[in-house]
Length: 157
Image (cartoon, rainbow, N blue to C red):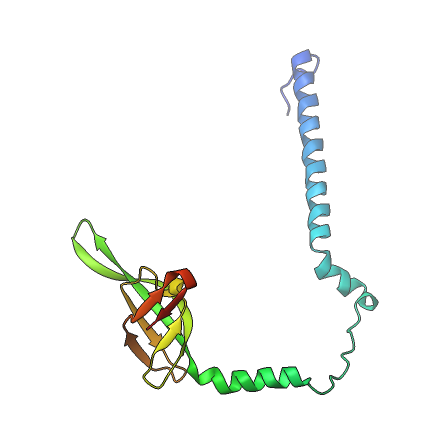
């Protein structure tokens, strides 16, 4: 049984405070439920109202334009000359005084000539200690830097 003296004004104030806290908690919970339902309406609304979302009919595409066919042919012809470049930087561990090569970045380039020169952007190999390319066949090859033009953002490997 409750041992409180409800004629005491402090007890009445405490009871009023507890009722107010319960009401605030109830309103807060109801507000959160409404907000959650509103946020999740893309999930539950189509299930309740199947007529609201109708699949759009896709019209058949016509012939490709000459410019589109030219671009597709260009990419198909040039794809074997594109290479993937990964670079690493040399970091020194001050505690062990050992040098470590850590991955630094990656980019792309293309094979320029039969001698195997590769053109890429300078920012791809900037501050790199070493670089490696991956050919379209998956073969990995180390490369060395031949020349750079930072002003034009070009590099030759």
